[in-house]
Image: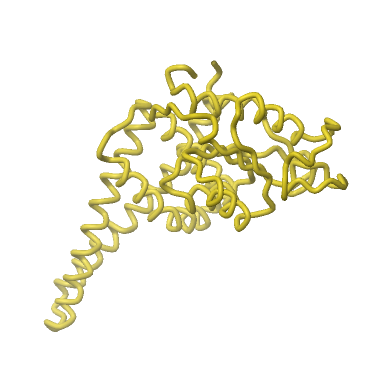
Length: 263
């Protein structure tokens, strides 16, 4: 079976963007610690020195934790192997450093969408290191309403089965995939409705289709629930008549049902 990403070399570059920014973020924090040490030995009064010592101790503990987590992420990406005991640290490190990575990326003039796309690739690759064997009814496909033809009069965000199967958009095909595999499908207008669908459905895994911003927010919001992110295709720009790579959707379903050995 094909891998989740069609072009492996492009994916490798994408992952490097986010991992590189995480590494720079760690170095920045380390720089703050060194600056604190230099100030500490600059003959300040004892009150200031105790405060600085406490800050240095906290930052040192933080950098130790995130460094171990980041090392686990890198080892997992290189070996596609699950490292038991490090998953909590890995998730915590990524989530804690993500805002700083975005800030560093802006300073380096790396577009936010590039960083977020890289984050999604890293998230998907980390999921692939695990082995799932879920029932179809425990899987939820979350699709954005912009997949529907913009002038379609039939409302599907309340109930996707309202689709009339005209074949003009990918909602029809997603419904067919949903019925074939027996997985749940929800079409949502944004994060609030998506969170409600997740709460109502209580899935054990999610296949989310969206743009970079919505996917990253959704992955972080639902952590530690596994979310396989699939970027939508935008031939007419954002939020209008978007498409999705249906092969990636079926591959994600197979992965969650059959496990990584079957993909």
